[in-house]
Length: 349
Image (cartoon, rainbow, N blue to C red; front, side):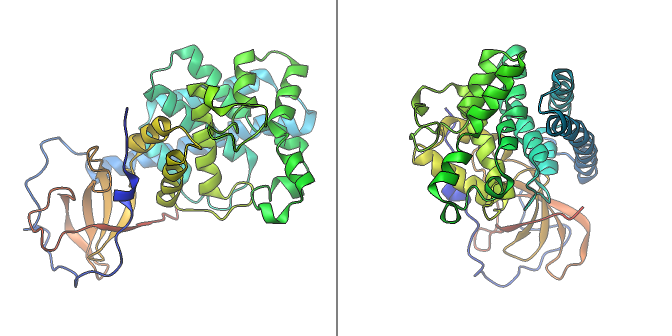
């Protein structure tokens, strides 16, 4: 079992020594890692491909939800084609580039179709990592795509503020918590959906500590696929503010997921696998260091996720280094003034 101590990845305090003067041939960095690292140009190309794929997948998923809104039913062929497209992309592109493309500029995006796309894609990535067979992956992806279809039957005033509990009466909370069963009933009446898909949708809020819903569900008896759907659904809620919460950064979101796994709300093995797969500071992340230099995360250190391998691109004054250089934050020669990641910088493109 993969266990990640996320507390070690909390960003250091902003209080630090004066910026360290460095040159493009950094004397404090160790020898280059033996593993061949991807150059920035390749990482940028991967990210560009992931952004393009996201745009194409967004259109496909929006079409599914437009049809549902207009007709009250799911076009099964349309949904199956969207799942197939997402599956191909999840198998073809790097997980890190997809993750960053899905995560960037999502704060405050409450569109149900975007939530469905992110949940479906990340569920597939986790399912592949846990070596589910093709049928299991197809069922998981379909359930993830349609897991919140019942929300379309909930009044928008409730749907958009569901997680601001102080603003909702008990009756409104109860109404919101019927959305999994409403979705299942809609799909049952329509027909054409396997019982395993319906089961995943019905229980995606049945948390392990029994704090979720439906109340009659027992979280301890849920399957790994249901628990994956719980984790990625919760991740996107926290990241985007879906349902009315205050959006968190990806780093803060992983911290919250880890805390909820420690308190047995979420499955610790699934959360740890998710974090180990993506990283506390994911590849492609743009970061600011305690030296005020800017860098790009180039590779993960699985043994020390809070200290990835980075490529430093800009000096503290904001000027680009003529020759960006790589350092491994987990293995620095000058231990008296070690570099550390201070914060992730959001991309705006």
